Image (tube, rainbow, N blue to C red):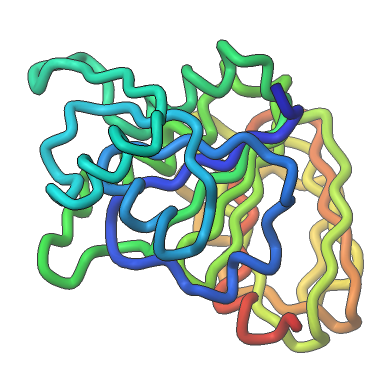
Length: 223
């Protein structure tokens, strides 16, 4: 399979501009109602996973008629549909995972689901995999130390560094208004929230731990 897997999950409708930032040769996996969102973006779904409790009836029929491989799980499963999508991508040899969602569904917002998804994307077991997500117009990247990431965005763009699953140690940045130099961000710390790029490129490095690197509204500044 392709080295990259795009996993389209539930929530609100994705920002349509995200289609321009997804590789054409990726394997596309839909998690339940993510199938409907994938279709709206014109993405060719190869695999549909989940308990299928939120996909539309039209989407289910379309998946069957198109010959999409369907891995249906029971409703009382131990994992979320997103995690099933991640496991399916790993089983197919993906080394780069891109999750796509519109974020909260205005008609059925579930904060617990959103937090669970974010924590799952940053879990230590994915340290050997490049993981990113488009959450509406927001872009997220996961960095497991040791790591050194380059970021590109318009000058003045916001960027937040959120330590999860424990402290992020030896955090050093360049190109940001409020620099960090070999510092430790305790888990749950808001020290890295609402920083700002001073040029069109920046870097974030860390020695150990895990960071969620969040660029709010990035799609609004990209072509």
